[in-house]
Image (cartoon, rainbow, N blue to C red):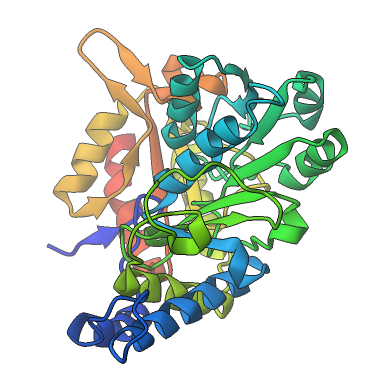
Length: 371
């Protein structure tokens, strides 16, 4: 069976160049980067180089980069850290209905500690209105957390506009860039963010490594307490091996530009095959170049995905269909998509190694559901 991977938004393979960069630190260089002796020096230099590579992709200073275990930790660090650091100023946090659980669940947890959370709605394309952000900010607002691009639909939020509002009001602004980093530009000064989360395994680095950008002067309460690693902002001996992998992936991303041509050819062929029986979810133009979220109207998405999986195709589901009900994903539901449409939702996310031959094969598999 030929296997076809169209789930790059879930996780990417480790790029060969990244694996090559990591290999020496798997086989040698066992020292602790905090040690001053001969064994620690190569590890310390490797971490410093990796931090510089991450900073190069984000357009920031190396000292503004803190390594974490991934996007989930980075989001928790940003949200909980802001709440605990700014309690004297206020307790109000603003986010959006289509955020990842790694943002929404920390917010729900903080509600048990007295936080006030405003969850903004999105339009039918999944976009937050910046005016809604402006109206939601109060004297007690300490943080706005709005993802750069949605993991399910690929919709790209107007982060730049929102950042101008938060700057005017003196509110910290965090963006979860786990899906956008490595696919579209994520220069922090262009975005205007104060905190930004990235996850290595979304752009060809290993799982278990990520980073958070903290603009100079922004100091959330550390999420992990212990010794003074990461300039006192994240305790724990640095993971040299995975840090090297993240740095190499960031450097690689600087030289790889992702374009939407393959995604758009896929969508055009789906329209030719299914006509009005297929619907695009997400913004038609403000969307990640690799992400195609579609609904097969009146069809059961679970059954379609099962058919594809039998053929060796990996993709993602947008709704769980049970015997007597359909459970739409929170993102699809927040966009106001009906059950009749949403029940047939699938996400195809393309990557660096996707070919048109693979897409044509998937189109052939999908054509049987239209017969």
